[in-house]
Length: 249
Ligand code: MN
Image (cartoon, rainbow, N blue to C red; front, side, top):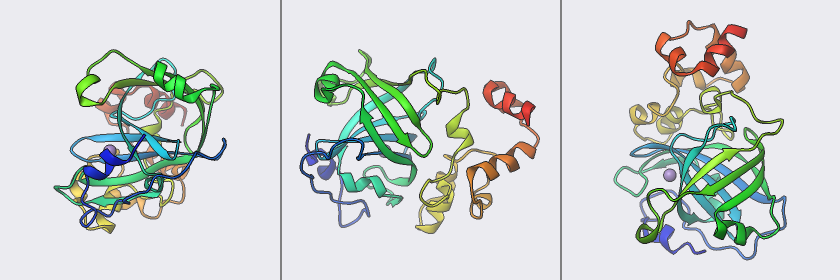
């Protein structure tokens, strides 16, 4: 585990991202850092990161996490990131590696569910418990024999929620689109950091205008506002879970 790849890909005199230095041995659980950064780069994705051995192990999850145990989300293993990256929220300049807008979508701590984490990672069957603000409970990352691997140094995994009291059919990426540190949408973050607001807004739920997000105290309040709006018929067809929520509201 090394930050060499992370540092090689970036120009630290241009990007506001941290250079990062590798910390020593990881502290004892449960103080291990967990973070998900929502990243509107060339494609929207959610960067899922867990502190281990002094770095953040990182997977890019195009569709983001699902609370539904029957849904498996593709998670591409990417280069380790420095631990201080966990608090990075802002804009990576256009043309730089990962250029676009970054939001701290969820943060907290995690605990391994297996005694030998390195062996679990090696085996490609890695079970852990999240203590985040949005994601909680038991999850697994399973390596697949899909594309990637070998020469690219990347491998494809599946991120899956285990059945427990935190499992749900709620579409959490839709229902909780705000930053857990600043309560901003991607478009708000882009605007505050002289980024591409229009590009960033394509990563926010279509029916939530960036302006609406600025004085929202909580996601709960945002949801109440959202549920008063007439449902878009196409959105309802695509998202049965949301349609059900609306019917209850
Ligand atoms: Mn990313």
